Image (tube, rainbow, N blue to C red; front, top):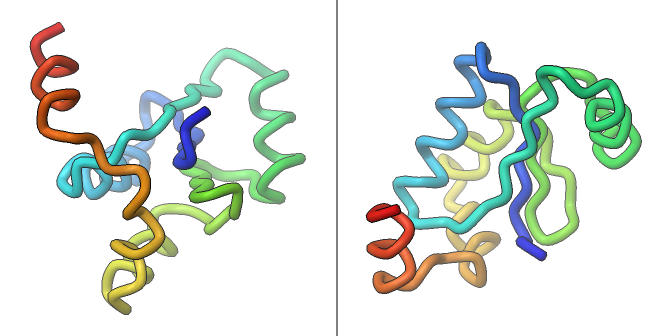
Length: 98
């Protein structure tokens, strides 16, 4: 199971921004799109307490959304939280070629 999970919707600009930051850091994450699934949205709310997307979970800790993710980045705390979730260059190259 991935230690970084992000709940998203296709039309959410903040979701794309959060994923861009995670991608720029080479983070392996699981994306769960809740666009057409009431059940997935319900699980997201139960786990995170949040009703909006994105909702981001790092190492089983709900951190909030895009603004909270960038706040952690600006405080210099994000890299330490993400350290165990980085893709090695071989994995990253093979996942991009698919």
